[in-house]
Image (cartoon, rainbow, N blue to C red):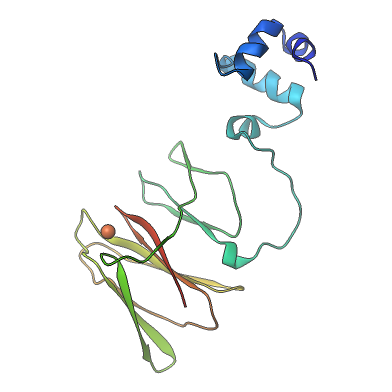
Length: 176
Ligand SMILES: [Fe+2]
C-alpha cells in the first residue's frame, strides 16, 4: 500500500504517513482504530509492532515464558510468546539468566522429592518470589514469600529447567 493510499483511507495527508514511517511523529490516539482497520490488524498488534498469527501449533513447555507484574506481583506463565498486560502496563517476558553466586541453588534428593534451597535473602525488600520446575509436559510453581525460607520441595520428574525469580535481580534458570 502506498503512503497516499493509506493516507486517503484514514483521512490524513501522505506527508503525515511519511512522518510516522520515519519516526518524526506518531499517530494521534483517535487514529489508532482507523489505522489498524486500514492495515487489517488489531490495535494491540499495531501498538506491539508484531502481527499475531494463530499457527495452531502445540507449544513446547520448554519454551516457557514468565511475566511478572512489578505493581501487584502477579506471575503469568505462558508456553510461548504472548502479549501480556497487568495493572495497565505491558509486561515483557523475563529473560532467564544463568545462576550467579548471589543466586545459587542447592538441590538435595529426599525420598521421591527434591529439596530446593536458594541461597538468597528473604527480606521484604529483596526476596525470591517463586520457584518453578518446567519439563516438556508440565510446570510446577511454588510461590515464596518474604520472611519465609527460600526453600521448597518439588517432584522433579524427567529433565527440565528450574526457574526462580528474585524481585530485584530477575529470573534465573538452571538446567536439571
Ligand atoms: Fe537477588
